[in-house]
Image 1 (tube, rainbow, N blue to C red):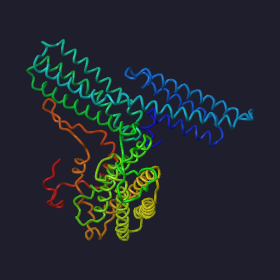
Image 2: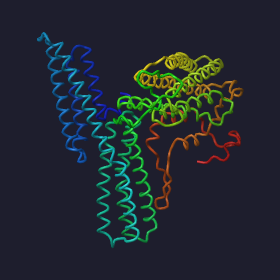
Image 3: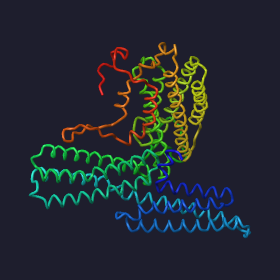
Image 4: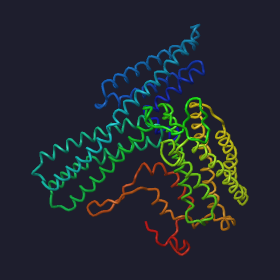
Length: 523
């Protein structure tokens, strides 16, 4: 099981997707043997167990709870039909088992799709309340700190009342984070939701504990400082949870007027004209599809930025880095377009940007091809060429997609989606090319390094700076002791890049070999 599959396996959407995959496999094979029937039963049990987070929540409405329970029962019934048909086919006792199998598979797939929508709606219903909940919880923590600081134990009853309210708010927010993880459509968002839940569960009660400690010892500077730290931490965690809820609400938005493109064509008009057309709203399915693709492109843009950061400190004439950064910037602009933001205002702007992106990729291909001639034969050169040889194909596919004529609203939307998908594929292979180029520059002593500005093995950006750039931390004073609290989500997203970088770079003292540019760097 892959790392992504391990995260998805614990979610309701992950179980639903696994179930749908198994049903499709049964349809393709014309049945299911005993092992696959057991696998279907195990997946169903896992799905039902995960829906309990929705149905057992005190904050789920009665309507949503009944809808989820009803659909879960329907899925169980359809799977029971499927298993019965599979057994019948195995025993060859039925003449119409083929039609019955198709009917059972269709019923199970339909029920799974409806249950997925019901879970998303139930989670969205609670996520909409998260921002005001977080703001109220932040104010409660501030009130708690004020009472503990100014009144001490004289206001013990009021202190206890606010602490109880804070615990209730904490439980509600944790429940919402749990549901958000179940409907998250990417590993990154699943990780974010999981650690938001964990951090709130750990640090939330500490606010109340710190307030009671200060109320019992009002003259203690350490207790006062301790409370201030946990109140700040509480506010930071609440803001993080609210941001996560907003992201997931945007990705699962079903309102047709939420997001729009200002140049999607009117019916009967061409979608590739240079003149901006009247704004047309997208339906919910189009919004969700474009938003997910855009988010994936944003993640690839971040990965590209992480790779180019490794080359910092190199000669400014390093064309590999310059081209890669340009492409990352273009990809990010295209991601902003999918959110209705940024400098790309029309679909024609998007198509023009995609053309420039393809041209820049072609230039990078030529530069790296020249670079590859200097790399000695071996495994690393073979890997570089394998990735590099894919670039022209993806460039050509993107160029063909951009130049494809369209007529009508649906065709233009399809072109927008295809352009984003092809750009994403090209961005992925370019990221691998840049990574492999960096490996070549560090593992193989190349005479060409000094002439084109490729960084040398021991003159790369210091590992310390790389960590400072990619680990978000807060320095917190607890009883006079400084400690660093890491943003665990960000570490998980970039941990592979960090480990790879540490393996490639030799950590050396900051002496004269590093150069004057590194003298002012500090940990």
